[in-house]
Amino acid sequence: MLEIARTLTNAGFETWCVGGAVRDALLGNVHLDWDLATAARPPEVQRLFKRTIPVGIKFGTVGVVDRTGRMHEVTTFRRDFNADGRHAEVEFGVSLHDDLARRDFTINAMAWDPIGHRLEDPFGGRADLERRVVRAVGDPDARFQEDRLRALRAIRFASRFGFEIDPATWGAIQRSAPHFGRLSAERVKQELDKTMEQVRRPSEALARWQSSGAFATLIPALHALPDRYRLACDAMAMPGLSTRPLRRTLRFAALFAGLPATTLRETLKALKFSNLETAAIVSLTGNWNELDHTISQRLVEQQRASHSAGLGIPDRDLRPWVAAIGRTRVAAFGRLTAAIWWADRTLGVAAPTALQARALHRRLLTIAFRDPIEIGDLALDGDDLRRLGVPPGPSLGRVLQQLLALVLEDPARNSVHVLSQEVARLTDV
Ligand code: ATP
Ligand code: MG
Image (cartoon, rainbow, N blue to C red; front, side, top):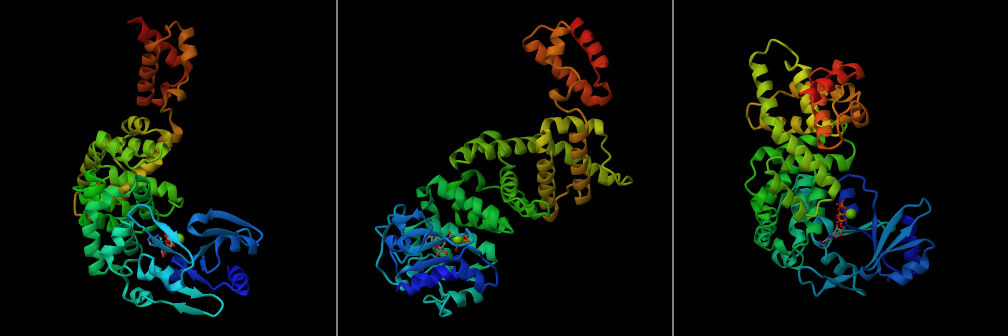
């Protein structure tokens, strides 16, 4: 990064580090994506470096690849104009000050000179970092009229850093909320993704989505959501959940677990969730709604009878649950239940204990990877059944289901010998 800045400066172009990296460095956090802002125009940047990528030439951004293969974004000083809330156009040939003035919040509108070691902070970003406040640059209502997404970004930054939102900025967020319908589904989804990925306690951000009216406009189904589902998102910071996409999907599953199936599908579709993420959320929340009542009731009863340390639920009763959840989702389901029960306990509602949740999680996993729980695990397959005289067609599927039910009751039945006898019995009547 320093080398890129030197090359640009030596060629006569003023160059600064800007944006999130400056903010994060002042907060004492390392941030590896140092973005540069420069007086050089894109063709000049492209001319000065061997390896460049045209990231967003129209907006002034060229990616410069350094010797280690890392890409750094170099963006020409710019000003946005003609902003109608959706389409911004940009103008080059402006000063650093103009470039900082178009940025959303004071804490994001500072520049650092990596060569002269000077901070340029025309809007008091550093003081706001110290006061721990998110404050719009300039008049918040005007800035949010230019781009409504900024209101949602304010919520995310405040929750991510544990900051307050400046009262005038918060007022403007609330006044913006009725206009959020103008935002594209893609931008809203991306903002939700970042919230679930970056914020340690997403429930704080989600509570602000609710109180500002953002949910009412954007995801009405979540406006009157009970606290437990927002709170449950916070529990997914557990160790072991190292991969961000998995944690994000689990957090979404927790958030949406309280919605009826049809509402859920409509909501995910409107927000353009991917097919993959939709499938995971629909299946996990479906299992949750089917099983929550039965499982938690049994575990809470077990607490009252509390002489045994175990779950007090035999494998034979757990197996059909594992079959319904499916081998590949059982770990995620365990985390989802643990998270929602944690939220319940935090809210003072009777729920299974953390110990019970962990024990259940382990037992479900053991069963999933030890016992036959799917048609594909049966000792007999469709071809075998046809050889035994079962006619092809729906009846064959029915027999397989019946065999699976028998095997779920007792896995010892899963042998060619026993199942062949059962087939004879089942098809005789
Ligand atoms: P993160 O760590 O989440 O990437 P960031 O501050 O780098 O945080 P980006 O979305 O990467 O956020 O944007 C980089 C910078 O561009 C911001 O710091 C801000 O100065 C500016 N910016 C981004 N989006 C907007 C916007 N919608 N309106 C005004 N300025 C913006
Ligand atoms: Mg960034």
